[in-house]
Length: 278
Image (cartoon, rainbow, N blue to C red):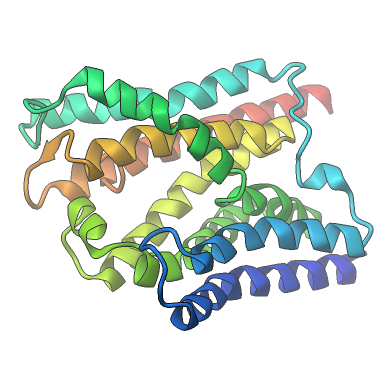
């Protein structure tokens, strides 16, 4: 059993790492494509989920490991928590930023922001069925089978999520978006992003493990993309120069610590629940 799981896991990791660079190669051949919406980006985005499905089919694996069932019974609270995590943490970070005068909200206009937020939810819901989701579910389930402890799972899954993004941050993402979030080189931004994703992955992994479903994580990611990305990238708030690394709602150290605490809190709940029902 372990040999089969190891083989599937290694194959999956290799495919995930290569997927984006295959997309870059495709875009280098098909040069007449819109920036940020190319065929190569599409290949990069959907390949990890398609690979998880293909491996499950050919190895006659357990479909529950991908977590397509919503498992609403007993888990509605986790869906609600998934909706609230990013708004609550972002509010805390903004309050800290205003108190320290590192964040300026004087240009923030609530009405157009709500329109942007609500108008992007459906698109981000669909996108985030693919973005990282099979790593949090399928890959996590394989590592659990191999008896990896929680910390190794967070590091491997979160690290791979970051490495999978390498073509995105180094090639696909417009330079202006990078400079808006953090005015550094692409390579430095990529390193910061890997650290960010390892911290964030704890929440996504634990939501999957506590519900055995991908959908709370998809909801969590949907809210994130519709909330904090426009907040920062569209300039709805202004962060003092040099303070982005501390209080940015996307990559700030304060922000990451809060999300890490959230993830570890869900982990503590899961472990306590397992003890009660074991």
